[in-house]
Length: 248
Image: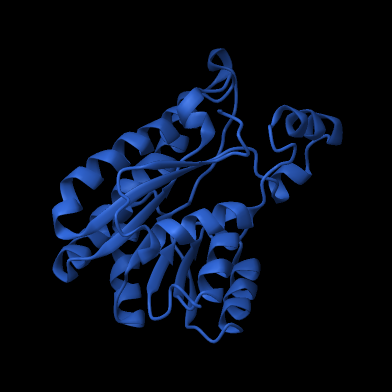
């Protein structure tokens, strides 16, 4: 059964990693997918082709979610190209890790803008459409770090914790119009980014997780599929931990 048959989704930051995993799972379940990338056009166009292989409409858009104007323009363009939107996944994010002592103002500001302000930009841009159709599901990609903090990631933790507060507020504001807003807090997910890390360090992290493995982009994508679809029709304002038991 394709549980997103006939639905149209926007996914930000989807050319690789978790975003790509979500796009593939959504397309496999019948959703038309509009997704954004910031710089890697090659991988984005490859992904567009891969998604079209599922028999759905898919399109890559170069867009900076941290820009209010670009977010507005993106949503308008997607509405024109796809004829509607039912799901918004705010996944775009960056890290600029450093101890607070060494963290520059620019590194703090950029992480807050890309990770946190982007979800304000995108939610604001899609809100009118969702209100008009009296339906819509918003999924925000937070992090286990936004719940428990992490040394060397004060900027990232602040952005991801802010996302949780934003999610709960939007859920309260828009619930009466049948618009749902939830967050996912992934733990240690193994992607191209973690492939560059020292194997011993990575194994140490795996050993500390109750399920004894890192998560995959698909693990997060399946949780996202649940929150985006009608399977979670009575779920809003929640933070779903996908962390192998890390915070248990």
